[in-house]
Length: 504
Image 1 (cartoon, rainbow, N blue to C red):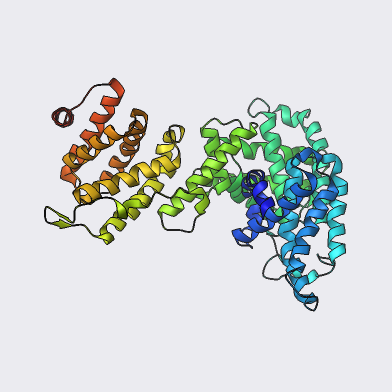
Image 2: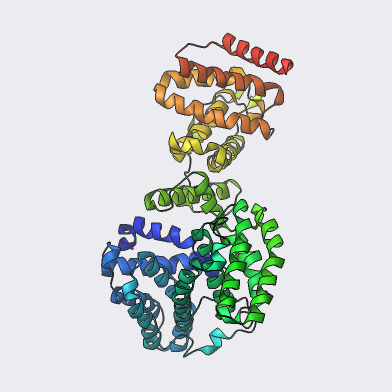
């Protein structure tokens, strides 16, 4: 797969964006992530090979051929006699493959080719004799999509219907902005926000319930407000107070302009009022947020400009790396390509056979190495340590922590539970002599994150923890002010801390 390697960065960037999309969230409930990723990567490899690396130059035929290449690869895995099996495989791949193509096409944002693109999707289904027209049983599963809210992505006809609804909505919103209804509200809510809330309601009611505005039901409105708005819309809890007033005012506008039935409008306005307290209460609970919403809010917290694609991409890469590191720390499946593995020379480090009644054993050395690796992964993934990401790489951080613990055991045969200030001071003194000041500074920064964590998790002896912390603090002061800090001074620093605690 040389081509995959060649295009890996570009494919990975699109994949990260795809993972935060509504389309992906719909698919992930029906397909394994590995399946979706394989389909997406194969499609992107074909598209980049056929259309080049400049998205602006991608033509509809490039998308079509990339999809057909994926089907051809599937065909190659079966003999000609297994046509029924091939078709079933085609049908299973069709929706996530179309979803991949649609997402990338929308991401590139070439609206002029929209009609040609829709026609191409139909053509592919016809060419391979798949899709709803050929296998309606795939689209009428009584246990899945027989009743709303629907989970399957919209088919091509429904996509065109939604496009027409949005086109009509644009005209309605232009009139709404100039209406008496809006003038009563515009001092309280920015129109851009109201426009956004209305678009979300219109699109989600159609996507999940296949209802156009004149057919809206209270059930659909309630589900979108209490569920989708809360879990998926990237805004903070304080903004939800504006949602219901904007939606009620717009429904009132549609009623007064004869766009929807008056009685139905009144029922829906009542439903918006009724659902509002539930929506606002759930919006206060972060456990109701989807991963994509959490990511958006995190970007807002870091003041990342959502229009700066490079900044967004960098944040998403870092977030994914953190997620994988945390999964690794908990023993869950993770992407090993995104998590740094420490050097494993701990078994070959010079060590005494026995010291102060303790024997060196391979099992203990391995346990310390593995435990400290998990500690390092966990710390690297946590918000409190994100500042370190600007100082060093994950590999440096992980190796700093793991190799230090390995070295302490090799020199002293002490497990972390038996670490004391003297042992750490000896190991640090050796490191300081053997490395540059810059490298040593990164080690101290890493240990500054590690020691409080081990103390909080009771992985250090409580009686020794303060002394160990004092050694690290003294080394940090030494690096900051360029002073030589002795063990005696470290003890004095510890004494000062104890006195300060008593004063408080």
